[in-house]
Every structure is written in structure tokens, then in C-alpha cells.
Image 1 (tube, rainbow, N blue to C red):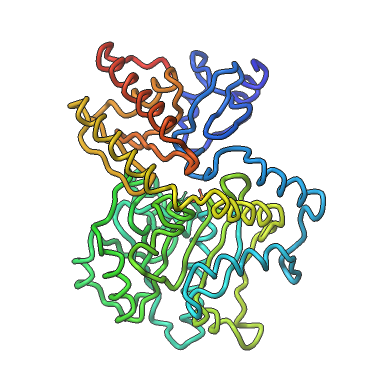
Image 2 (cartoon, rainbow, N blue to C red):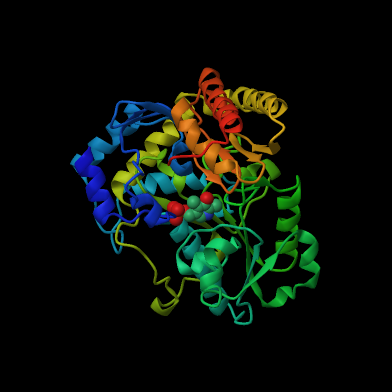
Length: 421
Ligand SMILES: *Cc1c(COP(=O)(O)O)cnc(C)c1O
């Protein structure tokens, strides 16, 4: 493993990572070699509970045999073929299954891409282009929310409100107005707005902050009344995280665009989809000049589609939604207990099986890193520890994870916790 680590330090460049700290001699990075269920195994044979579902992707646990089999079979049958000017049966089947989650005649078209940023990017461009092709050229502006996160490609990032990531590129990208709440809609001229973009129910990167109940339904009403497209970024919330297949279902909201990625393949291989209404789609009909000239080489990759279909089947087979309420309330109780144990916890926020545990300033990273010694891997966002396990987690495994945070916290408070990582 020494070779792998030295090659990493010599040649690899990690996302969201201060590389100088990463490459420093005293830093020994964990190398993850295999995974099973909710567990990750490192090159020294240590196992860790995957407390953030491998950056919010995993759903049914790792290396779930049905998904592994579907991937293997598809790789040996049709690994990839272009989706530009060709189709393939699994993409058709997946599109049919995705739109079936929504009332007939609403979201009816599926545009595939590779990741969350491109799913959002495609929706933004579709919204703008549809305006140009329906005599609404004046609608050029986007609305987004403070502290929002919609991905890192330049277009999606211009809707991002997390200034520590995006302020450098602010003057580039799309024309965007930022809101802190729905009250601010009154100062907006909606006739120049093409779309409003939001992470429904809970903002992820904004330290797991849920929106007030009913807010999404009110935003839908405003958008409809003002002819503004509603783009829902369900890249994090999609596929059961919040307790329903999609977060918007909890407020009976159907958007004009729905963006999904992370969990779509159960967290195994990259795939993303942008769902759009028939009305939007119809703006792209007519001559070739009206087509949506956008796409990626691996669009609708058959292996990704096979994994996504296998993941959807597991939702039924495991009766995931029948079993989630118990896990969600068990997690709430466990978190409440943790909160009562430590006065250093400022706030606990939870939406479904997504939780943020906010500690006093300076503790978040230390406790998160120390938790590895107690068998839990997750990431902090500033001083908020993210706990977003695979939906397949058991209550005993929830106990294990919360105990790891508790032990790590006790250690850090007792020692001052000068983290060596
Ligand atoms: C992760 C995420 C994205 C970006 O997805 P990538 O696959 O990382 O490009 C966009 N929106 C939200 C809400 C996300 O959580």
C-alpha cells in the first residue's frame, strides 16, 4: 500500500482537498479497498461504517449482489453505445420507470447525463432555450437560494450560494438572483425570470438545513402563478433519503424539471437524469434548429441504466419504504440522546435518514476525524457532522455509528484533540 500512497501523493489531485496538507509526510491517507453492506474496509483490514453513504450516493449498502450481477451481466452484453442517434432498451425501461413516480401528463421526458452537476446544467439550459423558442426572450434570469449547492460545473455553480466555494467565479455563468426566503420573492420582477432552483425539503451542503414545512408547496404556487419554471435539485434527496422516493412528494409538488443523480444507481456507477414536463419538451419540437444541442459521451450508459433498474427493484424487494419510518424515528431518538449528552452540540437537524449534528466552532472536523478510530467514516461541513447512512442500515448499526461519534466527542473534549490527520 506504500506504493499506492506514494503514487497518490505524487500524481493524484483530490476534490475539495487542500493538497499541501494531503501530501504532507505525516499524513497517511486511508486507502479503501473493498466494501460490503454499510461497511468500508481499508488496506490495513480495518472496517468503518460508511456514515455519509460515500458522499451521499449509496442506498442499499455496498456491493449488493443483485446490483453487482446486473452490472456484470450488462457489461458483458452491451458495455456502452452512443445515445446520440441511437437508443437501447434499458434506457427506455428506466425512463418509463422514472416518470411513473409522477402523475401522468406531468414529468414525462427523461434526459440522461452523468452526474448531479450535469443534471442541473441540462435543466438550466433547457429552461433558457425553451424561452427562446416560445417568444419569451425576456426571461433570462434564474432565482436560487442563499447557501444553495447545485454542483461545480460553471453553469450549475452560478446558482450556488456557498460563497467559500463559488465567489471566485461569481461574475461568470448565468445571471442569478439569490433569495434567503420566500418573503423576498416580492422584490423580484418575475417577468424576467426563467426558473427558480431549489434543493427541496433540505439544503445539503448548507450544513443539512431543512426548509420550513410547506415552503416547497408555496414556491410551486408562486412559480405557477408567475409562469416561472420550478427546477428541483433532488441530487441528494432523491431515492429515499428523506423517507419518500423523492422529497417533493412529501409536499405533493410536481416540478417542471427534476434533477437526479447520486443515488440513482444505488451508489454504484455514475448516471444522472433530468426529468422535464411534456410542455417544456414541446418547445424543442419543430425544425432541427429547435433541438437541444447538449450531451455527454457516456449519456444513458447501459451499465448505469442496468444498475439503476436493479436498484429500483431492490426498493420493492426489500420494502424499503415500509421499513424506513422505524429507522428514521430510531435515528431521531438516538440523536436526541446524543444531544442531551453533550452541551457542545449546538443543534441537530434531521430530514428522513439525513442528519446534521452541529457542534461548537472548531470541533466538527476534529470529532469527525477521530471517529475513524471508533469505526465511523463520514465528513463534516464546517462544524456540522453529516450522518447520512445507506437506507439499508439497521438500528444496531445506527447505535454503532452514534456511539462512535459519542466516543470521539468524549475523547476530543478530554484531550483537546490535536488531530494528527
Ligand atoms: C452532489 C450534489 C450536486 C452535484 O452532483 P455531482 O454528481 O457531484 O456533480 C448537485 N446538487 C446537489 C443538491 C448535490 O447534493
